[in-house]
Image (tube, rainbow, N blue to C red; front, side, top):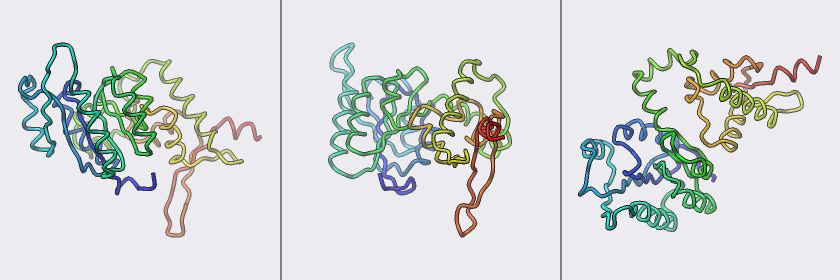
Length: 259
């Protein structure tokens, strides 16, 4: 897609059966990083509302509730309504991408179909989301991570701890997998001298693993996570005549092999 992030028009479709109202505020702030949500709809049977917090958050975030009656016990008519609306929106050519908010694998085929049509698909759901749906999205964000960040305080407070790892890091196996992903991705896009632009590395990582997020490992920024591993050399370089700078990284093993 040629549209840049700031100009990207997004349709946000939320499955209320799979999302709690406590996530909405942090979720909408996160979505704003990827574009402008021009369509915001949430689907569910509002006559059988169990979560009393929905009314307030829907008003605060200008999200339109779409009534979908539960005609048969055990059957999820919400999924069908979301899928039909998504295809209608796609063919209307009013948006450049979709945010599908659910932890349900039933949306795997929808995400795949939308990407086949050439639009961006961002998935948002809980950590219980099946791998098939995660892999079908261009980018997948875990709701728990967003809420954890919000509960830690205001943005300025989060920046103070950006360079510090989480108090309880993930199990060693997961950290090893993360490090391997970083190393292979840096080497995949590196030039003949082993240097790679971190922005290009980040884009490749998301293509390889849509659910990757530096916040999953206790860091606000990818650059902080990369530096914390101790596996890379880093160097700030000017990338334009106007003085713009970019962080470049190189696998330390590459430089050692050169010697």
